[in-house]
Amino acid sequence: MKYIRMLSLPLTVCVLAACSNGNNSNEITIDARPALELSYTAAPVDLSGISAQYAEDVRYGEAQRNVFDIYLPDCDEPTPLVIYIHGGGFTGGDKSGATSNATAIREFLQDCVAYATINYTLLKVPSAAQGVSSIVAQGGVLTSLEDTARALQFMRYHYSSLNIDSENVALYGVSAGAGASLWLGTHSDMADPDNEDPVLRESTRVKAVGALATQATYDLLVWETVLLPITESLEGVLGGTDIPTVAQAVGATNYLLTFLGVDSIDAIYTPDNEAYRANVDMLAMMDSGDAPIYVHNYKTGFDDLLNMFLHHGLHALAVKQRADEVGLESVAYSEEPAYPLTDPSGEGLTSFLLRHIQ
Image 1 (cartoon, rainbow, N blue to C red):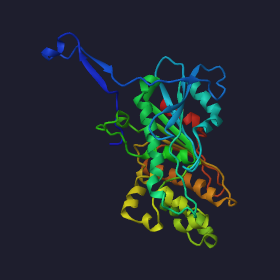
Image 2 (cartoon, rainbow, N blue to C red):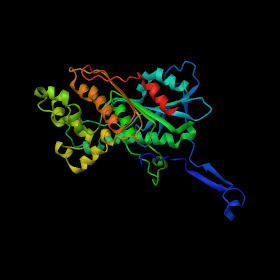
Image 3 (spheres, rainbow, N blue to C red):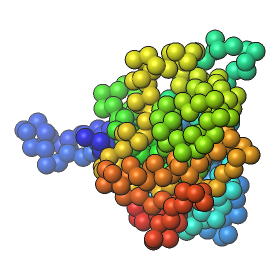
Image 4 (cartoon, one colour):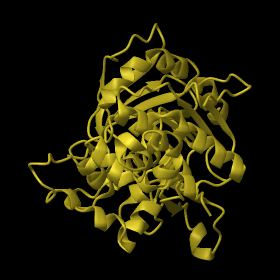
């Protein structure tokens, strides 16, 4: 089962002596989780008179970058929540990039939807001169992805302090943030009901996912199939179509190794890394019970091969084809002239997310 509703951790007390005689009708449930202390400051975007509060650098974990910012609209009832995950190839970027989404932020707040933007642990790709000794300890892309899951769980755990409706949460992001959103949207529920950390008992399932300039899967070996139409046309330049060869051709071998958490190409093909790759293969994990997906990839060019491989419309096409195959709702766009995708609804991202959480 992919969805487990994790409610608060209640304390149940008995009124007078009712419980002593087996009568539980007078039990009162009290939410025992601690209040989240928030320090409000001026919002970094113009809210155009919308009544909302803004808190920044709220800590959700122990790692240095385990912090988030959040806009909380002044609404009487608990509000849905949209979480933005920044891009940067899992090696750069920052939650402050959400300020470029000012129009969407205002629209969400106006509709009584809270808006959060998170940081997560970044990978450090060693140069060729530095060697590969530091790679394995970083844990690969799962380190970053698991941070995003914890951020979601933390906000759910503190739903009362944040006045959010923990049932109605959506995610979206750009590039790496798009892939992270897609990963959370397709992964089975990571709630661990018996974990000593109450945050990790919360569900990681969401109502909708938005992926802009996304990658289709983080099992990078599957990209050989996803991107074959373009790598095949460039085989003479690249030297082959398999992903290790393509990575070498664009100077990204250490990035490939760091991403998958291994220190050699041979290690990618071991049973351990096969299991690792299965845990980040969004296409394989996707099924009809997952969050509906909005995907939009933009035009790329042959002047920047690495960017083209990371963000090509073929990724959006692969997501759309897989969603259709498993019977999952999706709205998909690709601006690649050779591989165009247009949804007949013409629906935009903000409308899509709001439709699923309100």
